[in-house]
Length: 181
Image 1 (tube, rainbow, N blue to C red):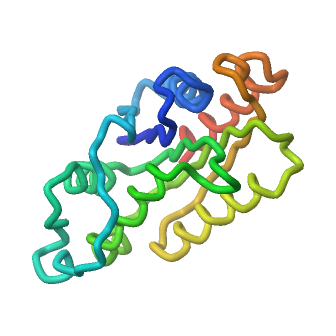
Image 2: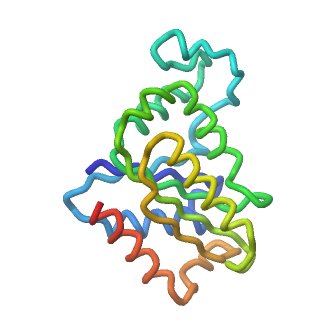
């Protein structure tokens, strides 16, 4: 299975990246995994010009949108990793998802497994984790994709995620869900 892990954090070595990297290590060697650093890609906001609806699903903007969309199209499982930014997913990850409009119909015909990993500074009882999880579930439902797992962590400073008592257990559980999919 081809697995695409998307780091929606601007911190390439932050807690979200650490969680995604650890997850990639725990995936079955029968899978191929690619970690995509969203902040290394230039993806501009959707202009809602809808040219993509008339040209085969290609964004007309001269940025990395079409590269990103093709990687998502080719993957069997997508792991979205995001820090909590003001009660929601990061802006860069939201830009990626907004561009799904270009291939909405094609994406809806594909069978994909979806996982989201959320890392925030607040305690896990705070509503933002539930809101982000629900957004990924709704996106999955809309595209007829299967949302197979959500995993959230409370960690603030870089490296704090490694101090979370159940970090390894939760990452292993997430890997197991993917490996069994």
